[in-house]
Length: 324
Image 1 (tube, rainbow, N blue to C red):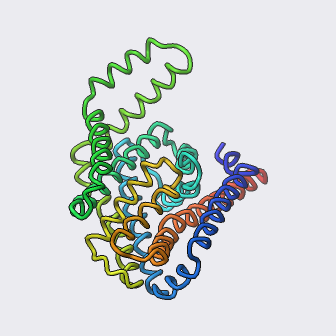
Image 2 (cartoon, one colour):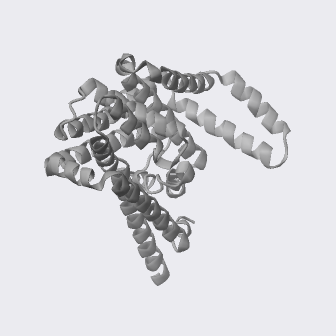
Image 3 (cartoon, rainbow, N blue to C red):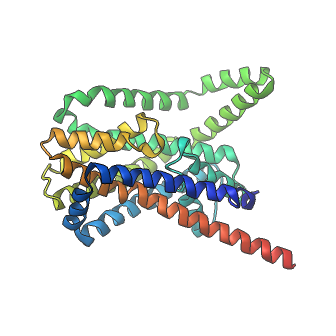
């Protein structure tokens, strides 16, 4: 099943979708200020770009460590290197609707005895933990722009509601009872949802939260700090506090937009917030493109490489099986 899922037209569709998204992104970047982007690359220098890529790599490593904690809390253990490759494949389809790429992890992990509900529970827990960390990063800078209070408060309310529901088992029991009494696809869907949420509850046990929350904060702080360094390299002296605030709020705006990978929403928010600080439009576009290339698009590239590697291994295994 795994090999069939990532072979043939499906893999080509993955690559085409990413290429189309990348071309569209680069086209917009060129139209809005390609000269500024090139000047930004020169100003950042190789050391600045490499530093940003290192911070992104640290982000992924910390999030992978958190992911492992989630799966282990549900009783699943996967060999480290193999698990790392599988985790990276989740970044391959970040730029497609619904972040379908992350569901690929479930297909590969199924081969290692991890049921779909556990993978989905870990994904759900990841998103919650990410939002908690990003909201925390927003807090010190809220007084810098009161107009964004509503966005942050709505996001915080959503996160608190989700955490509250996970901490309240009675409602899950109520939904489970209704699901058992229902027939057809809707009842089956509700039963799967209840099972997934019960698995997610394990990921939010107090002891696990004490371990996963600092990992999330460190992971997103790394990328926010990279954004600050790129701003400094380009001469945009906005200060560390404002840079972290801009990055965090932009991530929230991208999530709220419901666009794949936050494409468009994140960039628009980042440019707008920099403009409010007195940054020129070309400079704001340049640093935004640079940070997205070294975060979002770097992740997509790693995901595609991991996906291609797992596909090659699958083909090799199929070939050896045929020889036997």
